[in-house]
Amino acid sequence: MNREHFYALMSGEGTLDYELYLNTKTLLSCQTKFEELCNKDELQFQLVHQIEELWMKLIAYTLLDIDEYLQQENTNRVITLFRRVHIAQRLMNEQLALLETMSPKEYQEIRKRLGNGSGQESQGFRVLLKMYQPMWNSFQTHYLDKQCLTIDKN
Image (cartoon, rainbow, N blue to C red; front, side):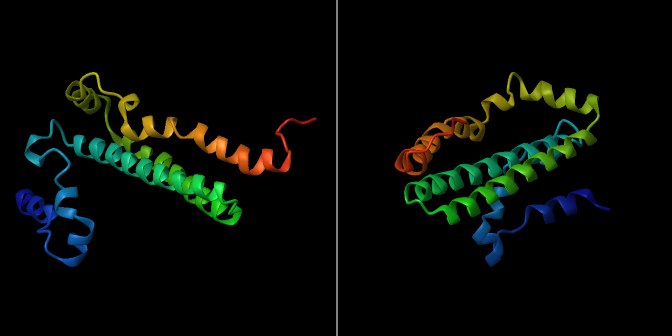
């Protein structure tokens, strides 16, 4: 097969309704150009991590909705949206298995390009770390305190 031909096809033209709605032209250009990849596993590495960021964006967006529904005491919607968060977290964990198909040699080459970067620098991860306390406060105010309940066993 002609690799360059298929690379061009994978980039898409960005003119069809589906491509325009999902902004695929921009989305598919977020990775290093094929000819600039340090090895054949780098695209996979970038995609897995970019997809993780997108899942975290959805989770954060959903947690904001959950917080609003907690304040409205709309328990059914809270439960439904927590299910969405759970499914997204499960998919995040499952997709990490793709990284197990990389050889240590390829990973080390990618690691050099990544520099000091790590998952601790993830925007999505850092946002999610800041969301638990406000959500707990909403739960405590609208579900525990309002009903004079505690989480203590006594």
